[in-house]
Length: 306
Image 1 (cartoon, rainbow, N blue to C red):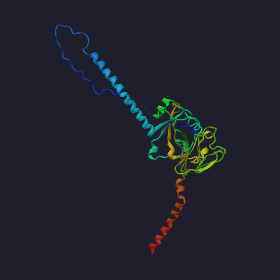
Image 2: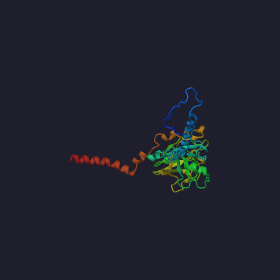
Image 3: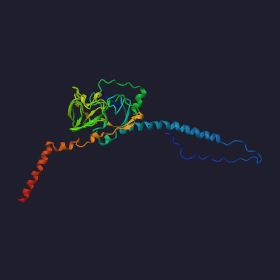
Image 4: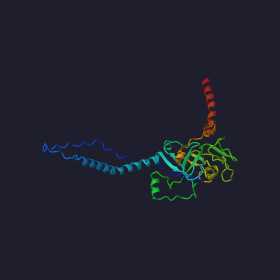
């Protein structure tokens, strides 16, 4: 099932600068033998006035503090990090229903693109969530989601693992293993009891080559995930355009007893899995260029000898 990964994110009143210096009152002596009156002159009233000023200062500054906090929350949500909730089982056991993940939205602004093995949040590319029940948030939830403190009910986002990037060939035969560029993946993150590949006629058996600018994604709960495999009839043939990716999920932040990072599994670092450079060399244009170099060298040598 497609999982909607949905919408996250913070004073004290500043003490008065310096210290207020109380002016000394001139003493008025009327009778040298008179006993001084008990109590302190102006002590209680001065303390009370200071407290009132501090209280008024706090209430005056509170709207400003709230405004700054809201602006910071919006900036963080828009450009840096956002929290998303996990409402389905398609990424078990890596992610469970009710988990909250923090998504890095900063690095894509600097041209970073999704890589194999990353868990990413992306906008619904072409009605993958059609038929899913729509949330009906109340007014408070709407406000909190707008500032990023709660998942947004309006955003149609999903969360999956990147299996292939532009230029990769991905294949599933039988129950697996899943292969990328001919290299079998060791996938300990796949849900216990699941097979890496699904035997069905709806998309579980496939061999695809990912176009440039697209990614192929799959859920870790292989037999319970409506991912790229089962959306091959859409306009992107099951691929997700890179520009639809919101960011990479980097931390499982909630519940606290499940806190942990979401690193790229070692299987995606195995030797030979990245064949892009080899593919570039074996392309027709590259082959022609390589073949032309010796001819040019021979021709120049002949001219030099003449």
